[in-house]
Length: 421
Image (cartoon, rainbow, N blue to C red):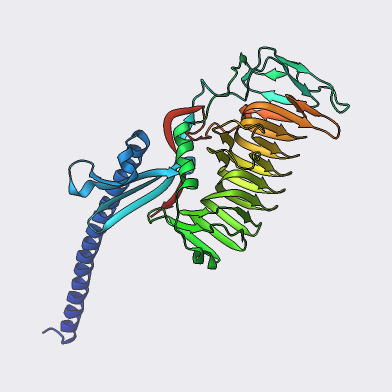
């Protein structure tokens, strides 16, 4: 005869078996859910990559307004694509979605460099040579006047560089500088000519982030001189001013655009932004502009006061990106880019007028200019480089440029990732 306790043992065993079987069923269901989720995620990732490649490969302007399409005529392969100008670069946004699931990425788009047009130096031909003095180094292909390059003795300094003078291939330059892209310049000029609404109350916060998936956040100071300080601005934000805008060292700007008549950046500033002015841009000492930044002075209409367009970069500053000047109608006072002592530019300099590279300045990349000048206490020297380094070989092979520059290739690449989920 069985003991009564055996019944309890059977019940316990049945309960354990039931729990195990239930756990297996739950685990199988959970695994199925996770597998389906992983499958959808992988599918969205693939669709996202396909959308990015479509934007990089296509030149279709319809993407400026945004477009939604099905990659394989399947409702589960839908992507939303948008590409629009952002300063001298482009912004791409791609969103892949399937029912309630979605992934998105926003990124900056730039172009590769056309190696056939690339050069460390391009100096237009005005039927005179240019001269090197002190510890000057030019490394890379150079387009120079037919009169050539020579050594010079200036400020009690003889030439102390490489005996080849230019460490690279020499080519004859033309009488005109390779031009910046007119369409991009006109696009930038529209920002100065159009009326812009704006909310200055936006800057009452100490941190403002603008997503590129949302409409652009605009701040317009109009004719009020404004100093930005103790603020962090990031993303899809544009600042406008009809007069002078001052950026304090306590202000941090990341990926935003600034359009003003004149822009003053105080010493010690640190950020990555694109600054455009019609009159002048002044950068203080000990500043750092991270890649990809841009400084551009653009003038399509003559100034009423015949003022000189100017970009002045202070000493001990590091700048990564593009620096350029442009004027549609030639002025008696040519546009000027002045780079102070011990300053380093990584990227490209395109000066339609004059370029002054002071003592111990360095350009890792390329310099295109109509004229060099150097001023000491007594004399102004034209087409002289003294204690200056221009080195195209020092520029990263992964450096990407803008379509506005004359050395741009056709292929587009992702310059930087901005937002993702």
